[in-house]
Image (spheres, rainbow over the protein chains, first blue to last red):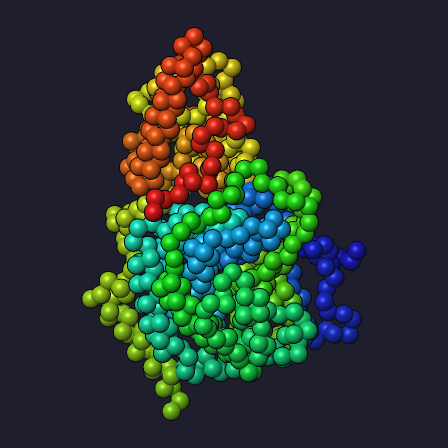
Length: 386
Length: 215
């Protein structure tokens, strides 16, 4: 071992600068750098200001999620899925519940499907609002946009608290439905929040969309080509910003998404600006879905009456279920051997897979752009490391 | 014109700044310790044990069945069941938890214990002022610290607690009617239904409905 190797959660890492490259400079951004999203570290090799190589180092937040889930009951891992992408716990619950429902062949009542759509789309709204705030914060617009985004997010988190009891760790979905029904007055409150949301979007667009500094820093930066997006398995807003028309809500029509009229916004450049704008457009579409769902929600049971909370043992088999989480395709793969806990439990995290092209996006860009590119990928380290 | 977009954005900032002096919608924060937002009813922090009546030891609903201990995902509950039975709040002989500890530094507030409890004995608290300078003892809540009265439960979650009380009263009335019928039928045989067996609690088993809000 040479003295210059250093230890990371992934093992010993060789220095990225080889012999004869003494003009290059290797810097380590993170894991505590204020511009990285959580404990993510990038070893960036620079030639002057230009990025030559980038090596992501992660695993600082690894907490054995999949292995723990294999020793828990099926229900027992539901609260752990909240902690994957802690920004949008409800969509994580949804994906996991969908996988178990597929495994055990459970039907979901109508009202629960609507509740899932409403809470899931609210999650998308708050996740995207947050992302815009964080991205602008990363690019040095310190405070203001983030605070405006958080102001709106708080309203949605209040709704979550009134419905599920927790602001972030909602633990809301159950196999065959949802845990609790909406309390009195919740729907009206939610309608009010959703009705006010486009106002916030207009305001936010007015605030920064035509800002020259923002355009300068984001347009043409971190271009992800359509081909690379498809080949590297990108999903969610990141793929759609590169013009890949792929939205699992349209492709799979899981739940009852086929009943709602909404469009899939697409970008044409695949740069940071497109990834930024696509979130606005998606939020506007989500508002449409929410309005329809809150208008049409029927009465009825919220959980399959045959489901028992204890002693749940699905038949041996396997299932993969995926949903369009705010960050992309979130999938859960389960193998059951007939015991109360899954034999194999695997998460397909959108954050990690969207992150894999980070080096391709960053090469040739300035070091200051790396931060903007990372922000536009929209990662949450809880999901990257698991 | 260059700079137009920046000016447009700054008008928005100015509108928010001046708006915060006149409108509540642009100033959503409160001065926390002096001023607090109203508690949201469904909120939850950590579990507590409900007792009926005045004496926390006698009135404790928990019978030490250890279902929550088994189902708790992070395994933060520790229960030792009693060897003997003691009369509960209505005078029925019941087992009781000799030791009931919850390590709230491990608890993740998922409320699965509440959902699986067939006796409506464990519920979620709303108290969040729990910081302690004792890292181990201060966060390991014992039976006494966990015990809170049914009145307190009714204060923090009125809707949910009302539904639970109604359901318990109904179950009790049903059990009494059944006992009476059995006693009438077989005057010689002991007719009162015993303690619900631990594996399959008789009438309260569908735990899915235990914390559902009434529609």
